[in-house]
Image (cartoon, rainbow over all chains, first blue to last red; front, side, top):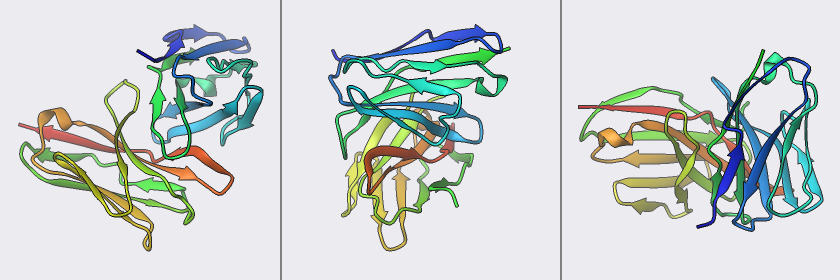
Amino acid sequence: DAEITQSPRHKITETGRQVTLACHQTWNHNNMFWYRQDLGHGLRLIHYSYGVQDTNKGEVSDGYSVSRSNTEDLPLTLESAASSQTSVYFCASSEGTNTEAFFGQGTRLTVV
Amino acid sequence: RKEVEQDPGPFNVPEGATVAFNCTYSNSASQSFFWYRQDCRKEPKLLMSVYSSGNEDGRFTAQLNRASQYISLLIRDSKLSDSATYLCVVNDPPYNTDKLIFGTGTRLQVFP
């Protein structure tokens, strides 16, 4: 069965460190998204991609970057982790307009 | 004004009750509407799409009112297993039709 997986599921890191969260999907979807979820804010879009070599900034992109070198993967990098980036991160993929977005199980990141 | 607004709740209802949630959206050009369900500490999953003429899936009914820019979700005969957070989701045209904007969610708690 096709799926979307995130790793790690939990991570604790120190302020200032570079961190990369992995997202891998086997749906062969062109669209991939990274969201963060915080209490009171819901899901906020960080970055998204509509295909290989395409990346776009979402509403909360500062301090984050992504790259899309193949269809299956969209890793999210925190260049220099800050305590404000402590959150739950969800990766998602979709086929296109009007279609369901499938989510990974989430990565709980704590920056200390 | 937030792009997608929902009453955060919680809505506390007894088993068997009927409960309704509303959601308003700001982009009059939005074309795709969904309700997602999110259980505590889990990823969001599609509950149902919302079509212009309204649609039903078992105990769940979704309605769209384009003139007033709101969508609704009606749950009949509530079950304990319906306890979750319900996320209203719309797409973001005209340039990013595949980008989904999430509301902060409405929490439902069904009690025996």
